[in-house]
Amino acid sequence: MQQTINVLENINSPEDLKKLNLNEMNELAREIRECIIKKVDTIGGHLGPNLGIVEATIAMHYVFNSPVDKIVFDVSHQCYPHKILTGRKEGFINPDLYLKYTGYTAPEESEHDMFKIGHTSTSVSLATGLAKARDIKGEKENIIALIGDGSLSGGEAFEGLDNAATLNSNIIIVVNDNDMSIAVNQGGLYANLKYLRDTNGEGECNFFKTLGFDYYYVNDGNNIQKLIETFEKVKDINHPVVVHITTLKGKGCNLAEQNKEMFHWIMPNTIKNFGQPASKIEDYATTTADFILRKKEEGMPIVAISPATPAVTGFTQEFREKMGQNYVDVGIAEEHAMAFASGLAKNGARPVLGVMSSFVQRAYDQISQDLALNNNPATILVFWGAISGADATHLTCFDIPLISNIPNVVYLAPTNKEEYLKMLEWSTSQNEHTVFIRVPAGKLISSNNKDNTDYSILNKYQVAEKGSKIAILGLGNFFYLAKDVKEKLKQELNIDATLINPKFISGIDKELLNSLKYDHKIVITLEDGILNGGFGEKIASYYGNSDMKVLNYGAEKDFPDRVPLDVLYQRYRLTQELILEDVKACL
Image (cartoon, rainbow, N blue to C red; front, top):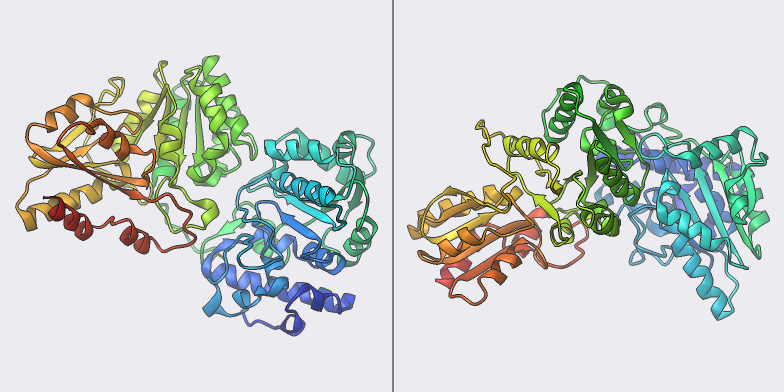
């Protein structure tokens, strides 16, 4: 795509935007879309949300005085137009600089970004805090929260709205209603939004008014003139107000408009290659879906649950149709999903909840209180758990200490397809434990050997290869790194190490660990997650009053931001060469 940039080349800040006439702003919207489409199809990223919010972003920056007036973006996966207008357009125009800026708001990049935000349903709460601080200081700036893409279904959004409505001062909540979440919107609230759309905002049953908000409706949220007129009305308002705008997700890209779920977030070259035959690749997501469908066909009262991220867990449109009433998308509501799963399990159903590691932390209290304290036999599948080069807001390395230290939880770490399926079989048929399974990250690995483990005998590790002097415990994803380290030790030090597949994250095999004391001097633990409070520390603690030396390998307690994975592995000494170096020093 050849970029045509005329208006945008002169826009370096919101002040430049305020000099434009309406025709120029409409041309600017077209140019911004062109830049976003080309960049996202080149490196991947959020497409649909950003294309839909272009006009609203232009109108907000035209009317309000950022950064004095403060704009908070919910999730912030719709902040690309905002970044382009606030001095960061080079990251969207110059392919050499496509990776310069993060895909989310980031205060270190610009004074126009209030917070680092990547998780959902937070903008209203954050904006309410900004507004209260402003009032306490006796200041007068506008506080604007932008929320949409299903974020209203999250519990914090309800809590934030409930509290924001009680402010006796300025707070402007822009509800970006594109009738979509990541997948199709779920929840009773969205029926009310549809009713308000159908009545042009004039219907008597109005969720926002019942909370106490003043209310404005813009039926064409992609019309800059209408948006400016409405924002001018609410600017400097002295009480809480909701501006409800209807927008088209994916606007300006026909494929994204027609395939809203698929084009919410895309991989590189998705547009370029759209329509080409795709080979079906077996992975852990398809394996999960196939297992659940098979159990439903066998008559098990199994219920698949997604907190609005079905594609990640293999819950495709075809899967959802086959599951029928046995599939539930609860919306972006991980807290509710956990308690819902507990209720299902309590009444005899077999819930299987798929959740991303990055998002499971939002439901800590429900995991602890509603699930584990009641010890209900739900199965929770944690996807993408691993050290990664992701944005700081979407790191997936914190789930092990978070989940494995809650009483009554059995947290399992399979290393291949066969182990994963055996764990699923056991978890969905037993009634004694709340079970989490850390679904292996990366490509599917098959051992082609049946797993005969009896998982009802908790915390029994598997000795994959018996040796002496050094024992290597490779947890989950890192079992194969452990095998490589074993081979390296054999080659360079002539040490035939013991290789152990722990399988259980949440407990220790005391009998096995005690047996290692007789003919081993060093125990190495490898885990694809953060070390603090993790698996390795449990092993080190157990050996604390003995002569055994323990070397723990995993991630440091940090928020790395888009650091390449190979760089992180070097930093954390997670390579064969660096581990061997440490072993030599220890010996």
